Length: 231
Image (cartoon, rainbow, N blue to C red; front, side, top):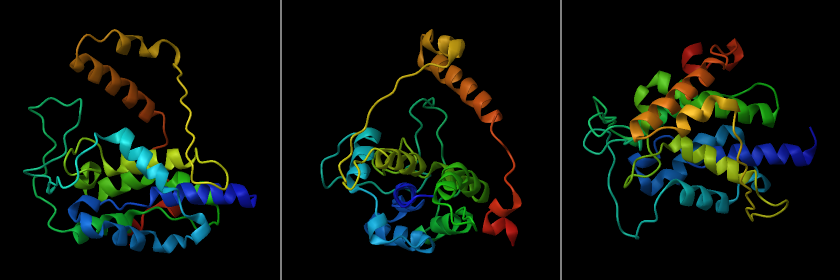
């Protein structure tokens, strides 16, 4: 793999690791916990991601909030709210996560790591399997939000969007130059376009997503199993 391509995928991987799954449990030191989680990756200074990618991802994920507003997240009284879910079907935890350490344990144990030195494969393994394995280890980790005040998008979504913006950075620059591509997959989206209410839109989107998910490989190879399953 050429050096430039190597750096490209390493920076995208770095963007995926700039926040940890348990970020919202203790915001004040979340950057230090993310650094500890990414320590095995051994990122060099020239492999750092663009903070502008993070800012663009945050702007696309959530509403701008005035400084000083804050709300603690515990998953029970303040819980994840899916934007398309009915109000009577909240994503509440049966038992709250007691500490940031408890949340971070799942992230450390389930982070996919390859033996081969292949940054591109490492990125796709992290993107494809990490949330899946973390939620298998502890289902609550699937609904850890990126934002405590408006918890309607997960930390996983924020990490992937940040990595996507990182891929739009100019060469040898932190300037993000994204472009939007609109495409339609055949006639399968017609029933979504004809939705007349949120329930129809959610149901159509769910069916399409579920069928697409069924086409993906379900069982990873042994060398990709998370550490907690190899014990």
